[in-house]
Image 1: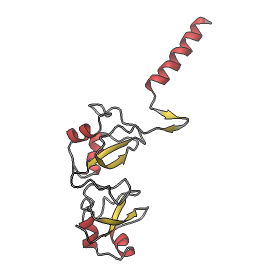
Image 2: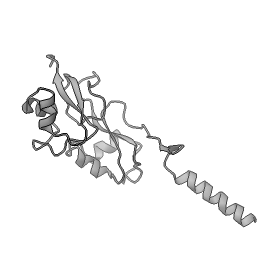
Image 3: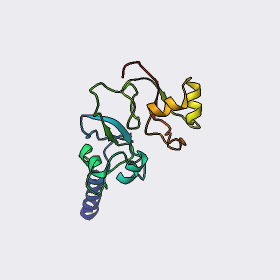
Image 4: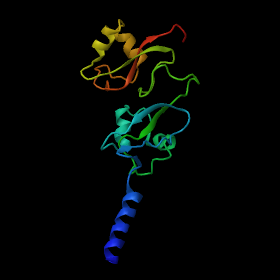
Length: 165
């Protein structure tokens, strides 16, 4: 009986030590990124650091990613789905962005109207629905490819700017 109790205790300890941080059945995102973070990303199942960098068109390096996210271990083995990581710094202004995160890097600083992408959206449809030109849409959202293949569901995009530059 002592052997069974010891084995059960050891398994319970291992489950607590090696489990991702959770509250009930929900994963708790570790908010350990740098305080001047401007753009965040919510980790998806299977993501590795290099995958996240690729999703943002390699607009930052692996070294920058680690510097902005000190909670992420070298080797990137401790990312958990739902964890929020920093993928861009606010290097041009101390004004918070008009669009709530997540946004892609490079969003114009004078953005004053945002649109959250949903399934089946494309750049033409978003620009037409918001009565703006495709040229303006790409100018205000410089991380987007001209063929719009990287418009991401759930991300916010600039669809209007103030006259301030």
